[in-house]
View 1: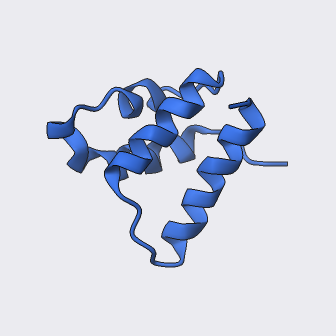
View 2 (view 1 turned 90 degrees about the vertical axis):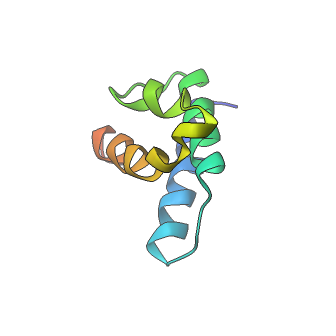
Length: 74
């Protein structure tokens, strides 16, 4: 996955959640992992990507934090 692909994936998830669709914690964590591997940097990204199954309830808040930390799209 390229950096642009990872950013598009994150944006798609943001839109889904904005329209009230449920996005599972497993998908949020995977998106974080994909973004991290693609070279996207954010202070909270590694934390999101490294969440364990028992920590999945933390994923939505961490995902939101990651999105806030990313520079705005141009």
